[in-house]
Length: 316
Image (cartoon, rainbow, N blue to C red; front, side):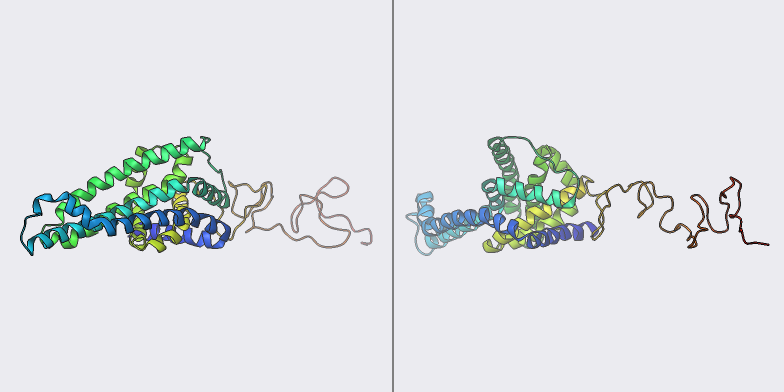
């Protein structure tokens, strides 16, 4: 449960980050809007042509009597529209990330920069990065489709198919959605797809806490567009946690003082003689201040080279 809450926390942290950096929110919206227009056109075309597609695919039902022909083809039409919606949900992120590769990579770099430490860069040409991203997205999509076919078949099991199987389907989609989003930051770090999957499987519930709420939100296309920039930012923050890159980051509200020794007591600057909980003793004002190395009540080197307080010339 702690990892589930942690994954959702990274999702919220990413949304807060982009709203604090409004310019990056605007840049991150552009690829999502382009993808939304493309998907809306494809879905409208599917809606208008689903009946004709079903009739073309089932010529053997032309001679069926009413109402069986209408029921059969109506079921297949609804099934094709539902399948199209499912494919749209599971591919929207991959297509949006591919369209917006330069935008989201720059956004991820800025998140790393704002968190401190190194800012990894792949050093690859843009064409090469696009090719790797498309290749890995296709591999992930094939895995999702295989899981989808299996879960679709299991959905016909009475009771279980209408309760447990949908939950498993959302979990599978959420895990792979988290993989797609973390790929932006991990690809810059030179992590291959198989290693990315191993990394996320090691913290599966953390990935589910991040990905499942996004799957539910992405069922609404406009919501998906507005959440994408923050999802990329949150995935970058989660990658930093998974790889242990934020362990030396100063706590929120605390700034690291230049020259401060990370190995010293917290708050103690490098070379400081006293830690903050043991401040240096105060010295009296006037001509009889204790020389360096002395303290009130302790030995101090006098003017004659001996030890003890300086002599008082007016003493009797």
